[in-house]
Image (cartoon, rainbow, N blue to C red):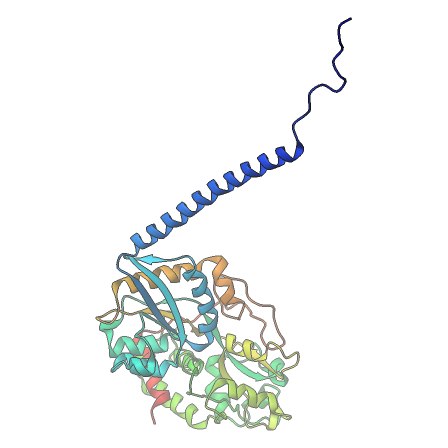
Length: 389
C-alpha cells in the first residue's frame, strides 16, 4: 500500500517574520518621505534666500497709541507669511508714539536714539497731524494719506443730561450753550447754568480740534463741501473758538480721558465743574466698556459728524528705503482684509469689520452725515487758534 502524507501539510510562514518584513517596509517608506520633506524644506529655504538676495529689512510704522497694540498683532501675523519686497525679507514693526513728538521729529532732526528707527509710515489719530506735516515738510510725504479706520467725535456727557440733550443739541449750539446762563435751562436742565464743556489739547485730544472744525463749519454756514481756508481763518471763527477756549473748564491731566473720569466721579452733575468733553467714540468705549453704569454717555451732536480718520502717512526721502514703502502698502492692504480688520474694529474702531456690542455709554449709532475733511490749510488754521498761548 502506498503511504499517506502526514496530516497538516507544510508549515506556514511565521507571523513574527511577517511583522518584521512589514516594519522594514514601513521604515523604508518613512525614510523616503522624510527625504522628500527635507528636500522640500531645503528648496523652500533656497527659494526664500534667492528671493531675499538684498537681505533683511525691518520696516518701522509709528502709530497712535490706541491703535498700536491691535495693529502690532496684525503685523505679527503678516510677518509670519514671510513677506518680500524688492528682494528684501520684510519685518513690520509697529510702535506707539505721541503725535506731537513724532511731528517734531519729522519736521526737525530725527533722533534715532531717543525716538527709535526712522519710520516708513506714520498713523496718527487724525488728519490734524498729517495736515501739519504736509505744511511743514511736504517733501517727505509720499502721496495722499488714506484712512485706515475711523472713529466719530462725540461729547461725553452725564447720563442725567442725555434725554434733554440727545437730538436737541448740534455743533452750532455749543458756543451759545457755553456762554448763556439760561441755555441749559431751556433744554429742561434747570440749575445747570451754562454748558461747562472742556476743550483739552493734551496728548491724544484730536477730538477737541475736530469738534472745533465742526463748530467752525456750522457757524460759517458751510452748507456743502468742506470748511474752506478762508472761513477757517475768518474773524467770526477765530473769535468764537477763542472765547470757547477761554470759558472751557480744565481737565485734570489735560486729556479727554481725564475729563471722562471727572464726569464719572461727580455725584451732582448739575453742580459739577464739568458737563461735557469732546472725545472719540473709540476712546470713550475703551474707557467705559466694563462699567454697567458709568454715569456718562456718548452724545452725537446734530450736524455733520467730524471723524478721527487715522490716516496712513507713507513717508519718503533719503531715510526710507523704497522697499520699505512697498512693504507698507502691502501691509496696509493686508490689514484691510476682512479676517484681519476685525481684530481692530472689535476694539471700537470703525472699519470693515464687526463692531463690539453696545454698552451703557456707547451704542455705535449710524453716522449718516460724516463731516467732509477740511483742507490742510483750513485744519491748520483751526489748530493754531486752539493751541496758541
